[in-house]
Image (cartoon, rainbow, N blue to C red; front, top):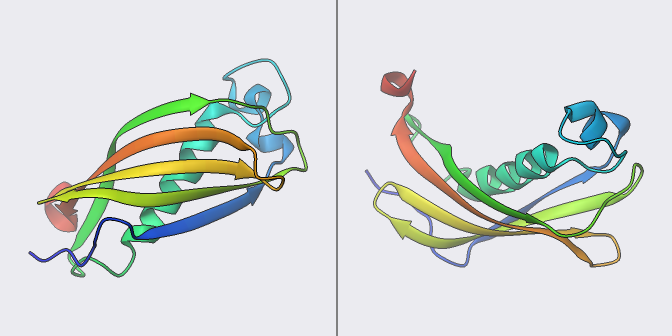
Length: 124
């Protein structure tokens, strides 16, 4: 199996925070700001975008590990962008550094994320 993916390759995912994305709505806290579970989902979306088109049709990648530092709040209506960058490709293992920034350029979160390439059929 060939993975057409090099360290340094990156992609982004952007969202505008809604009430459904808040810690209150996600039951991860009691304040109306972007909840950490939604930050993780946005980060994974960016990592998936990096991998898109790099694997054979019968393969996909699945998330196996996330380390998150959630450093600043993002209020409802704010736009945030996650940029995922490939740090390491080791066989089937992929590692990403991900930065989430608001429109002012403030880093609201940083993550390390690992994914593993699997055969779709046997995984399911």
